[in-house]
Length: 256
Image 1 (cartoon, one colour):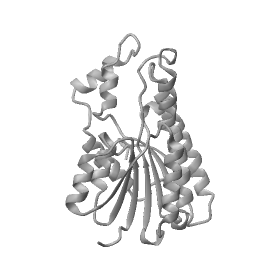
Image 2 (spheres, rainbow, N blue to C red):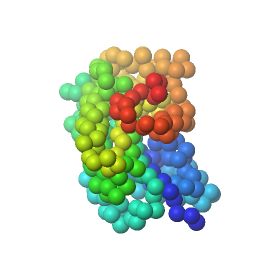
Image 3 (tube, rainbow, N blue to C red):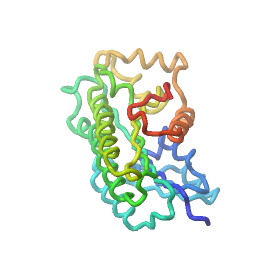
Protein backbone atom coordinates (compact mmCIF):
# COMPACT_ATOMS: atom_id res chain seq x y z
CA UNK A 1 0.00 0.00 0.00
CA UNK A 2 1.35 3.41 -0.98
CA UNK A 3 2.18 5.61 2.00
CA UNK A 4 -0.48 8.25 2.65
CA UNK A 5 0.38 11.72 1.38
CA UNK A 6 -1.87 13.69 3.72
CA UNK A 7 -2.66 13.31 7.40
CA UNK A 8 -6.06 14.30 8.79
CA UNK A 9 -6.84 14.29 12.53
CA UNK A 10 -10.51 14.86 13.40
CA UNK A 11 -12.10 15.12 16.83
CA UNK A 12 -15.67 14.02 17.39
CA UNK A 13 -15.41 11.68 14.42
CA UNK A 14 -17.59 8.85 15.76
CA UNK A 15 -20.95 10.38 14.80
CA UNK A 16 -22.74 13.33 13.27
CA UNK A 17 -20.84 15.88 11.24
CA UNK A 18 -17.43 14.69 12.43
CA UNK A 19 -18.15 11.20 11.16
CA UNK A 20 -19.39 12.62 7.86
CA UNK A 21 -16.22 14.71 7.47
CA UNK A 22 -14.03 11.68 8.20
CA UNK A 23 -15.94 9.55 5.69
CA UNK A 24 -15.41 12.17 2.99
CA UNK A 25 -11.70 12.42 3.77
CA UNK A 26 -11.07 8.67 3.52
CA UNK A 27 -9.01 8.23 0.37
CA UNK A 28 -6.02 6.19 -0.83
CA UNK A 29 -3.72 9.20 -0.48
CA UNK A 30 -4.93 10.09 3.04
CA UNK A 31 -4.39 8.80 6.55
CA UNK A 32 -7.31 9.63 8.83
CA UNK A 33 -7.24 9.57 12.62
CA UNK A 34 -10.49 10.05 14.51
CA UNK A 35 -10.40 11.03 18.18
CA UNK A 36 -13.70 10.42 19.96
CA UNK A 37 -15.16 8.86 23.07
CA UNK A 38 -16.80 6.18 20.90
CA UNK A 39 -16.05 4.43 17.63
CA UNK A 40 -17.75 4.67 14.27
CA UNK A 41 -18.73 1.35 12.70
CA UNK A 42 -19.49 3.15 9.43
CA UNK A 43 -15.99 4.60 9.28
CA UNK A 44 -14.40 1.26 10.11
CA UNK A 45 -16.40 -0.57 7.44
CA UNK A 46 -15.61 2.04 4.81
CA UNK A 47 -11.90 1.93 5.56
CA UNK A 48 -11.68 -1.87 5.66
CA UNK A 49 -13.76 -2.34 2.51
CA UNK A 50 -11.59 0.05 0.54
CA UNK A 51 -8.27 -0.78 2.20
CA UNK A 52 -7.76 2.77 3.46
CA UNK A 53 -5.66 4.10 6.34
CA UNK A 54 -7.81 4.80 9.39
CA UNK A 55 -7.16 4.89 13.12
CA UNK A 56 -9.86 5.49 15.70
CA UNK A 57 -8.55 6.62 19.06
CA UNK A 58 -11.04 6.39 21.90
CA UNK A 59 -10.55 9.30 24.26
CA UNK A 60 -12.79 11.36 26.52
CA UNK A 61 -12.10 14.96 25.47
CA UNK A 62 -13.57 16.12 28.77
CA UNK A 63 -10.12 15.02 30.00
CA UNK A 64 -8.15 16.43 27.07
CA UNK A 65 -4.62 16.34 28.45
CA UNK A 66 -4.25 12.59 27.90
CA UNK A 67 -5.49 12.86 24.31
CA UNK A 68 -3.10 15.72 23.54
CA UNK A 69 -0.16 13.87 25.08
CA UNK A 70 -1.01 10.79 23.02
CA UNK A 71 -1.20 12.85 19.84
CA UNK A 72 2.15 14.51 20.49
CA UNK A 73 3.82 11.18 21.28
CA UNK A 74 2.40 9.62 18.10
CA UNK A 75 3.52 12.52 15.92
CA UNK A 76 7.01 12.42 17.40
CA UNK A 77 7.30 8.75 16.40
CA UNK A 78 6.36 9.35 12.76
CA UNK A 79 8.56 9.91 9.75
CA UNK A 80 6.83 13.13 8.75
CA UNK A 81 8.58 13.10 5.39
CA UNK A 82 5.88 10.68 4.23
CA UNK A 83 3.23 13.39 4.65
CA UNK A 84 3.08 16.27 2.25
CA UNK A 85 0.57 18.02 4.52
CA UNK A 86 -1.10 17.57 7.92
CA UNK A 87 -4.48 18.90 9.05
CA UNK A 88 -6.15 19.02 12.47
CA UNK A 89 -9.93 19.50 12.55
CA UNK A 90 -11.21 20.39 16.01
CA UNK A 91 -14.86 19.43 15.59
CA UNK A 92 -15.91 17.99 18.97
CA UNK A 93 -18.34 20.03 21.03
CA UNK A 94 -20.87 19.60 23.82
CA UNK A 95 -24.13 21.40 24.58
CA UNK A 96 -24.98 21.31 28.27
CA UNK A 97 -28.60 21.20 29.43
CA UNK A 98 -30.17 24.35 27.93
CA UNK A 99 -30.91 26.98 30.54
CA UNK A 100 -29.26 29.59 32.78
CA UNK A 101 -25.93 28.50 34.21
CA UNK A 102 -27.25 28.48 37.78
CA UNK A 103 -29.60 25.65 36.83
CA UNK A 104 -27.04 23.47 35.04
CA UNK A 105 -24.99 20.87 36.94
CA UNK A 106 -21.42 22.03 37.52
CA UNK A 107 -20.04 18.88 35.90
CA UNK A 108 -21.91 19.68 32.67
CA UNK A 109 -20.57 23.23 32.63
CA UNK A 110 -17.04 21.93 33.09
CA UNK A 111 -17.46 19.36 30.34
CA UNK A 112 -18.74 21.94 27.84
CA UNK A 113 -15.66 24.13 28.29
CA UNK A 114 -13.20 21.24 28.44
CA UNK A 115 -14.46 19.54 25.26
CA UNK A 116 -15.23 22.72 23.34
CA UNK A 117 -12.24 24.87 24.24
CA UNK A 118 -9.56 23.22 26.38
CA UNK A 119 -9.34 20.20 24.06
CA UNK A 120 -9.00 22.54 21.07
CA UNK A 121 -6.15 24.41 22.77
CA UNK A 122 -4.23 21.34 23.93
CA UNK A 123 -4.64 19.34 20.72
CA UNK A 124 -3.66 22.37 18.63
CA UNK A 125 -0.51 22.83 20.72
CA UNK A 126 0.39 19.14 20.42
CA UNK A 127 -0.29 19.18 16.68
CA UNK A 128 1.80 22.30 16.01
CA UNK A 129 4.66 21.03 18.15
CA UNK A 130 4.63 17.54 16.67
CA UNK A 131 4.45 18.64 13.02
CA UNK A 132 6.97 21.50 13.06
CA UNK A 133 9.03 19.71 10.39
CA UNK A 134 6.19 20.23 7.91
CA UNK A 135 6.44 23.99 8.17
CA UNK A 136 3.64 25.77 6.32
CA UNK A 137 2.20 22.49 5.07
CA UNK A 138 -0.06 22.39 8.12
CA UNK A 139 -3.62 23.51 8.74
CA UNK A 140 -5.89 23.76 11.76
CA UNK A 141 -9.61 24.04 11.13
CA UNK A 142 -11.68 24.81 14.20
CA UNK A 143 -15.41 24.15 13.85
CA UNK A 144 -17.02 27.12 15.54
CA UNK A 145 -20.61 28.40 15.54
CA UNK A 146 -22.61 31.54 15.01
CA UNK A 147 -23.24 31.33 18.76
CA UNK A 148 -19.58 32.15 19.31
CA UNK A 149 -20.26 35.48 17.63
CA UNK A 150 -23.58 36.36 19.22
CA UNK A 151 -24.99 35.47 22.62
CA UNK A 152 -28.15 33.44 23.16
CA UNK A 153 -30.04 32.91 26.41
CA UNK A 154 -29.85 29.43 27.85
CA UNK A 155 -26.64 28.49 26.03
CA UNK A 156 -23.87 30.37 27.86
CA UNK A 157 -21.35 27.48 28.10
CA UNK A 158 -21.57 26.70 24.37
CA UNK A 159 -21.40 30.40 23.46
CA UNK A 160 -18.36 30.82 25.70
CA UNK A 161 -16.56 27.79 24.26
CA UNK A 162 -17.11 28.89 20.67
CA UNK A 163 -16.23 32.53 21.35
CA UNK A 164 -13.07 31.30 23.02
CA UNK A 165 -12.35 29.08 20.03
CA UNK A 166 -12.67 32.04 17.68
CA UNK A 167 -10.30 34.25 19.68
CA UNK A 168 -7.91 31.35 20.24
CA UNK A 169 -7.82 30.93 16.46
CA UNK A 170 -7.10 34.63 15.97
CA UNK A 171 -4.25 34.55 18.47
CA UNK A 172 -2.74 31.33 17.12
CA UNK A 173 -2.91 32.73 13.60
CA UNK A 174 -0.94 35.80 14.73
CA UNK A 175 1.67 33.53 16.31
CA UNK A 176 1.95 31.47 13.14
CA UNK A 177 2.23 34.58 10.95
CA UNK A 178 5.15 35.78 13.09
CA UNK A 179 7.19 32.68 12.31
CA UNK A 180 9.82 32.73 9.54
CA UNK A 181 8.52 32.40 5.99
CA UNK A 182 7.45 28.86 5.20
CA UNK A 183 7.19 27.80 8.84
CA UNK A 184 3.77 28.94 10.07
CA UNK A 185 0.59 26.87 9.92
CA UNK A 186 -2.69 28.15 8.47
CA UNK A 187 -5.50 28.58 11.01
CA UNK A 188 -9.23 29.12 10.49
CA UNK A 189 -12.34 29.02 12.68
CA UNK A 190 -15.44 28.20 10.66
CA UNK A 191 -19.13 28.51 11.50
CA UNK A 192 -20.58 25.55 9.56
CA UNK A 193 -24.25 26.57 9.31
CA UNK A 194 -27.33 24.92 10.82
CA UNK A 195 -27.01 21.14 10.80
CA UNK A 196 -29.40 18.35 11.75
CA UNK A 197 -27.41 16.71 14.54
CA UNK A 198 -28.08 15.38 18.04
CA UNK A 199 -27.17 18.85 19.28
CA UNK A 200 -30.05 20.39 17.31
CA UNK A 201 -32.39 17.72 18.68
CA UNK A 202 -31.33 18.60 22.22
CA UNK A 203 -32.04 22.30 21.63
CA UNK A 204 -35.45 21.89 20.01
CA UNK A 205 -36.45 19.44 22.74
CA UNK A 206 -35.44 21.79 25.56
CA UNK A 207 -37.79 23.27 28.15
CA UNK A 208 -39.04 26.59 26.69
CA UNK A 209 -39.25 28.04 30.18
CA UNK A 210 -35.46 27.68 30.50
CA UNK A 211 -34.51 28.05 26.85
CA UNK A 212 -36.46 30.93 25.24
CA UNK A 213 -35.25 30.08 21.72
CA UNK A 214 -36.60 26.53 21.79
CA UNK A 215 -39.26 27.32 19.18
CA UNK A 216 -36.68 28.87 16.87
CA UNK A 217 -34.82 25.57 16.75
CA UNK A 218 -38.03 23.59 16.38
CA UNK A 219 -38.90 25.80 13.40
CA UNK A 220 -35.51 25.13 11.81
CA UNK A 221 -36.47 21.45 11.68
CA UNK A 222 -40.10 21.84 10.65
CA UNK A 223 -39.18 24.45 8.06
CA UNK A 224 -36.57 22.26 6.37
CA UNK A 225 -33.75 24.69 7.13
CA UNK A 226 -31.30 22.12 8.48
CA UNK A 227 -28.46 20.68 6.42
CA UNK A 228 -27.71 17.00 6.78
CA UNK A 229 -24.32 16.15 8.31
CA UNK A 230 -23.25 14.92 4.88
CA UNK A 231 -24.19 18.21 3.20
CA UNK A 232 -22.38 20.18 5.88
CA UNK A 233 -19.30 17.96 5.61
CA UNK A 234 -19.14 18.58 1.86
CA UNK A 235 -19.14 22.33 2.46
CA UNK A 236 -16.51 22.04 5.20
CA UNK A 237 -14.18 19.87 3.12
CA UNK A 238 -14.65 22.32 0.24
CA UNK A 239 -13.72 25.21 2.53
CA UNK A 240 -10.69 23.31 3.80
CA UNK A 241 -9.43 22.91 0.24
CA UNK A 242 -10.05 26.52 -0.78
CA UNK A 243 -6.89 28.22 -2.09
CA UNK A 244 -5.67 30.65 0.52
CA UNK A 245 -7.12 28.70 3.44
CA UNK A 246 -6.41 30.67 6.60
CA UNK A 247 -6.28 34.08 4.95
CA UNK A 248 -9.63 34.73 6.65
CA UNK A 249 -9.32 33.39 10.17
CA UNK A 250 -12.92 33.89 11.33
CA UNK A 251 -15.14 32.49 8.60
CA UNK A 252 -18.69 31.36 7.92
CA UNK A 253 -19.41 28.57 5.46
CA UNK A 254 -22.30 30.59 4.07
CA UNK A 255 -19.85 33.29 2.97
CA UNK A 256 -17.24 30.92 1.57
